[in-house]
Image (cartoon, one colour):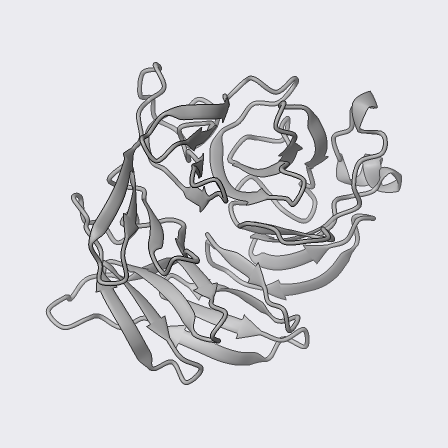
Length: 314
């Protein structure tokens, strides 16, 4: 997806610095302000659909359709003419009578769809007819339908990498549901503080990506930072809250790793003085930012950047 171009600078308040004069031309698919919107590199809304719910995951599929949640417990696949061609409505599992929320999903290579069901405390895979073909129970220390999970992804190994917001932990599960790796978030040497904006600080993790080298890249949620940790839990790379010039990180959400190694950081609840998306190099140089408070707002958590050649990890 593309960012706003220079011609849209005044209208859309795209942050630019002299070092970013030749910044990339991306489009951005994201959800906020009661809509799912695709914005091109010129800042023009190319596609938009009303959607009055908080969205914590989103995906542009290879067939051009878009997946997102339409309420707390329903994920859909929608065509560009806004027709729902696939839907999963989460139902209470046997023995559970509480609320269910979906914060993560993934269309798999075999055509099935992985869904993390908070409240039900499970990951399921469903086929094109929405029939459950696989189910694993999640390990949850502090059950809460809103906080059991955030991002979850099935790995190439067949394991599942799951961010448990309420537990402040990332767990990797094997195909039978056994926890084979855990990373526990800390406060990074700062005291816990309340709030969703830059002033808020905690260990409520949002996103994680398994890198080709076996390390895990973490979007720390209200930890206000990005971390790369080894399988042993050692931090080998990080971007801290105020380490990028002129930018403050708040609730760090979805991450994307580009073929050149650059990282796109989702920066939610950071306020209008800060970009909603930031691309940084491995030596922490900012090469692109996206700040569009006309189409989106301060709650832009789920996004996908389009217009990148090669495989993007997300």
